[in-house]
Amino acid sequence: MVASLEDRQRIDRLTPLDDVLACIARIVAPVEPCELRTAAAYGATLAEDIVAGERPATALALIDGWAVGADMTIDASSYAPALLADAKPVDAGEAMPPGSDAIVPIEAVTFADGVAQVLAPVAPGDGVLHPGTDSGSREVVQRAGTRLRASDLAAIQALGIRSVRVRRPRLLFRCLRAHHDPIADATIAWLGRAVTADGGEPWSMGSDTPMKKLLSERDADGLIVVGGTGSGSDDREVRNLAQVGTVEVHGIAISPGETTAFGIATGRPVLLLPGRLDAAIAAWLTVGRGLMARLHGGRDAEPGTQATLARKVASTVGLTELVLVRLTAEGAMPLAAKYLPLTAFAHADGWILVPAASEGYPAGATVMVRALP
Image (cartoon, rainbow, N blue to C red; front, side, top):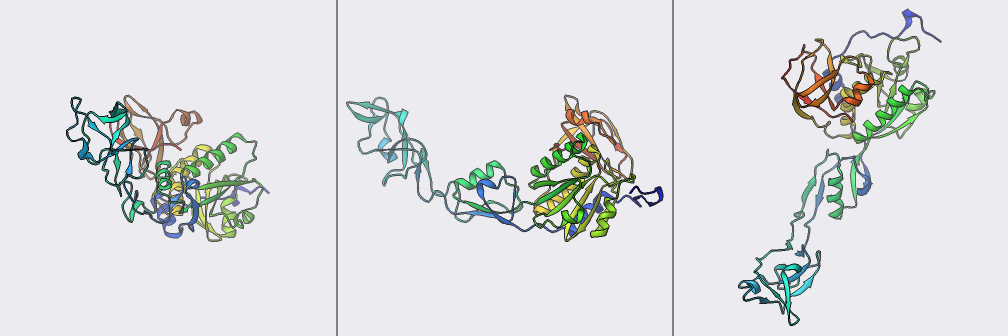
């Protein structure tokens, strides 16, 4: 049924972005942690500190060579080689033999009449991995709230830690447009990758799935609906949310993305994004990432890198505006604001935010450029 003009969804006021993020921080709790194999925890957020024992527990050979007492080689030279009669050959990773405190590299050893000899002295500790070098006793390897990188996992696995306690929010998606719509397909695909990049786990359901059924999915930590947030003849998702939960905000002072809505149903957050691709992306970058940070109990995305603005940016006071930029030799070049053309996303290296209280930035201003997912 098509709503008449007087019965359509309307936005009473635009809520400032900071107030929306404060609302999310107040009413959204981090998801329950789960135990994951370390190898499978890439991108998840630590729910507790990773603490390691002393590694290695005993001295190990750091390189292949001959284990010696360094004092055996003190006077070694090409004129008076030191004989390695009591030295023992070792491979990297083997325990140091008793009485040895250094490794003579294979390439530094010569043989004369079948006897190994070294032509230069080595110092105590050369070629040796000492106890506690990799980690000290009860050393914190990584703190709770950290998003696990590949390098983190490599270190944690090598320290023998087989599982970790993490938070990885599962977000359920629904797009109101049919799947053959290229805009809808692109929006859902982008959001799925963005959620994964922010340490979450996305999955989606068909456009005809009722909101009540979506909210009955017990494995979902939150719901993202794309489309139906405006005042169009078929837009009714904000009212649908009000019937099954509460609408905390409808209309956010961001551009693009003004029709974004947020609420709670069955104890879980619901984020309603505009159906327009650029507006959905802008709303996710400004609001969705704040929601994700709260759900996984960690820090929000890194602030980005500083750059000099190559050309001025004008902005509407009262709106937090997202501007796409391209990094050039002259600095950060603004590409688009308010409406973000599809090709601008392909050309952009990142984005900047113009605060609601600002009329924009002059050329030469220092701005913070954040990467696009």
